[in-house]
Length: 182
Ligand code: ADP
Image 1 (cartoon, protein in one colour):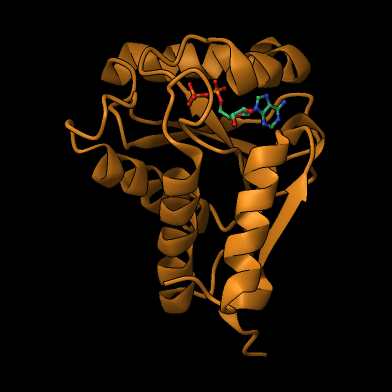
Image 2 (image 1 turned 90 degrees about the vertical axis):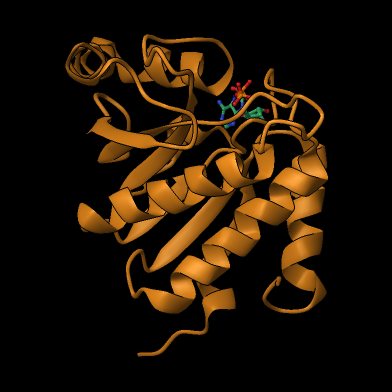
């Protein structure tokens, strides 16, 4: 029953639009109205339903703040939901970027839990055009996730979906180094 936290974390290299998780986590921008990178890929593959829901949320609450997360349908994707979180742009670490990125992971996991998601797949938030250094971003992603899973039975499993080789290598190193990263 009690699966160790390290066995509830997976690392793969894939296109997140192909993943059959209860929720996939998108690196959105604060308008929620679509962008490039993984966001563009999710909207292209998932169809217009996702953007429609994003528009409604944006109209209601004026987009999404950095570090916050919202949830929508996954449209035509194999996932059930898309959680959209807004990562910080990297300004050299002068704008509380680590805390903001940690909030992305914490708030996405909380939203997944509130929506009864057993499996969640994260993209590597902020590590594309937002320019967050990949080693630091991977460390934050893993330590926040470990801390959350230690306290919560849901989600049962979290997968980090790496798109590029560098992120894959970093996540593999960090998850294999000492069992659970601190
Ligand atoms: P941000 O603006 O938060 O930096 P990006 O979309 O530019 O968001 O990049 C976030 C991460 O998503 C990057 O590591 C990028 O390599 C990755 N990525 C891009 N396309 C995909 C995809 N189809 N599936 C999974 N990850 C992707």
